[in-house]
Image (cartoon, rainbow, N blue to C red):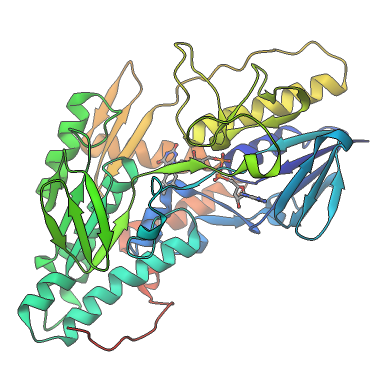
Length: 418
Ligand SMILES: Cc1cc2nc3c(=O)[nH]c(=O)nc-3n(C[C@H](O)[C@H](O)[C@H](O)COP(=O)(O)OP(=O)(O)OC[C@H]3O[C@@H](n4cnc5c(N)ncnc54)[C@H](O)[C@@H]3O)c2cc1C
C-alpha cells in the first residue's frame, strides 16, 4: 500500500485525511496534540462562553472506524526528503507522500518579550490561561478596597482589531456587563473598561468599509473603546505604550499577528516574510513533488496574485485538493494541476447577537448576520460526524452562558500587589 503521512490535524490536515478515507492507502496522521481544534471559537473559551471540550474532538475518535488510518501523538522535528523519511520526537517514519499541515503560531513581530505580559490566543492552553486572567481580574477587584486600583484591574486592553480582537473585545464586554454583573456583590462589573487598539485606520481592515464601520459602532454600543491608528510601541507588566499614550491595565491580550509554523526548521525550503512555504500550483513543494504544504503554513496566491488569507475554508479546500492529487497520482489518473480557492466569505461576530458577513457579492450584518454566522461558521465548518450533537451543545451553552465555562482552573492566588 502507498504510504501517506499527514502532519497536523487542523482544518487542512483533517480535510486531506477525509479525502483519503475511502482509498486503499495507508494513512498516518501525526499531531502534537491529540485533538482537532475548532480555532474560530477559541475566543469563546477564553471569555468563558464555552468549555474547551465544546470546541475540540480527539483525532483518534474522528477516524476510529477507518482501518487504513493510524493516529500518532508526536511532534515533527525533521524531514529528510532524500530518503522520504520524517523524524518525530519519538520515531522515524517512511512515506511515499507527505502532507505538511502544521498551521501557524502567534507572532509578536520580533518582540517576543511582550508575550509574558500580553498572552495570545492559539490553542486550548492559551484560552484557559486568558480565561483565568480575565476571571481572576474580577475576583481580585472584589477583594480590593482602593477604587483606583480596582479601576486598573478591571481594565482590559486587546491589541489587534482583526476578527479575533473584535470578537474578544465584544465577548469581554458582554461578560462584564451582562453575565458577571449579578454574581459580584462589592464591585460593579459593568464599570470594567475594555479598550481595543488597532494600528490601522479601521477595525476588520480587510472587510468592506461599511462593515468595518458597523463593527466599530456595534463594539462602542457594547461599551468597548475602539482606538484606531494606535500603534503599540512597547508592552511591559500591566502597561501598554502606544504612539499616543501609556495605558495601565490589569489584563493585556495580544490578537495582532500570526506567522507560519516553522517548516523551514524541518526542511530547507523558501518561505515568505511570515514563514509560509512557497508551493507549486498543485500545492507541492518545489523540487519535492511528493511533499505538499497546505493551510496556514503555505503561501498560495489567489487569481490576482495576492496570498490567500489564513482562514479555515482556505485550509479545508487545500486539504481536499491535495487528497485528490495524491489519489489521482497513485491511480495514474489525470489530475487538476492548479488549486483555485472558492471564496467562502469573511465572518466575524460582535457580541452574542451581531455579526458581519462578507461574500464579496453580498453582505449581511446585525442579528441576521449572526444567525447566518452561527449556522455557516459553526455547523458547516466543523464537519464532525456528530456535528448535530456538537451544534446543539454549543447553542445551549451559548444561549445559557454556560456556568461551567467560568471555572478558574489555573488558579494560583496571588497576594494583592496594589
Ligand atoms: C483565535 C483564532 C480565531 C480564528 N478565527 C477564524 C474564523 O473565524 N474564521 C476562519 O475561517 N478562520 C479563523 N481562524 C484561522 C483558522 O483557524 C486557520 O486558518 C486554520 O486553523 C488553519 O488550518 P491549518 O490546518 O493550516 O492549521 P491548524 O488548524 O492550526 O492546525 C495545525 C495542526 O498542526 C499541529 N502541529 C503543528 N506543528 C506540529 C508539529 N511540529 N508536529 C506535529 N503536529 C504539529 C497542531 O497541533 C495543529 O493540530 C482563527 C484562528 C485563530 C487562532
